[in-house]
Image (cartoon, rainbow, N blue to C red; front, top):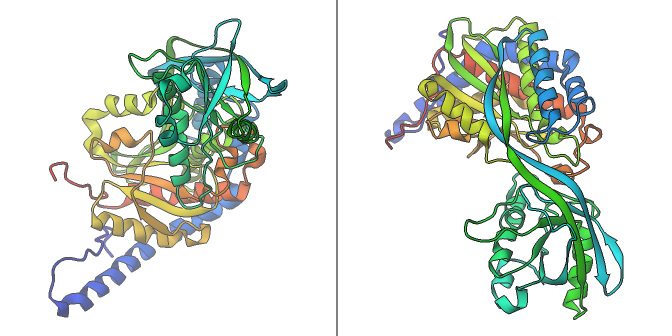
Length: 476
């Protein structure tokens, strides 16, 4: 049977033709199963029985630790990744240089001085400025959300510390709860500064436990003097908010020794499995290699990176070399510095964007697999991917949702490259994300194996099909 796969697409046809369409769908499903079912089963079995993705995660997270952008650990991690991919049989393993931000977290402390003295747990937000050497002490004003804050008069805010106490919803199949809550971390300090606040605190953007601290980037506005910004635990934020709501004066003292240093040299780490017939055509797989510094970046995004790295090793192990090149990219500077790694890759490979068949990213932790999200392809392309997903039912990755990709491959999408995002449950992800709990201990090895197998099967089939995944015309 011909290896090219023609997916069924519903078009304007007479009613009498519907049976022919249904028959075509079955034929396409059978084609994928016949052509790739055995290879998919081999890949899944090899990942489960011989996969080293968890061992790689231990080496990265326990052996090297957190990989904050611009830090010495980031350089060590890049060297480890290159050595590992070369040992795994990777082709053209290299660094592609990127200038990255260099934000440094120093000491950080906070105390309540009224209505009584007690220590408050605190962590600075990425990109935050520091306090003066002798700290900041001021009364606290609380807002549950932006709407409530906008109702405050400038005189209610000037000279005070603003606390945004917005709780995050727990979700399992999307990140909508995070999307709502993270706005207070990313925008809250700038919003508070407009009305003259001297500092801004946000309730940690997470789903538990109550004593967890969650860091992450904040952004300032041009023309508005930046103010120190930090996160409180859910427990402390709730306690302070209840006191203020009761009419009690709450006064806090903050000391943050944090600062942004000049940019430094960083790099994306790249390794390949060279294609057997069309090596110039590329399927990109990967995740971001940098992490926050409270934990060790296990779920965010160590799991995505080792899944991509292990895809390369498993396919080499099984001697499954697809027609096209599979390129592993471990992106720099996703957490701090505006996606410089993803933008640098897209810019540096812009002249070959038309030869990028698809880009696949994992940046949502290693929860139970659901499937993949997709964007930038046609209905025909979506149908092809749906049929590939039928081969991933045993790892739980058999659903397709429209809209998908990832932050680092997003710039490739702007060049018309179809994008796929690994879709895993996020029910527990935000218990760990950007916190001290983002460690190997909270990664389930079998779930990481499922994700690795799903990425490897998807990448292999898309790289090996006779015809590339269709892309949407940029003129539409």
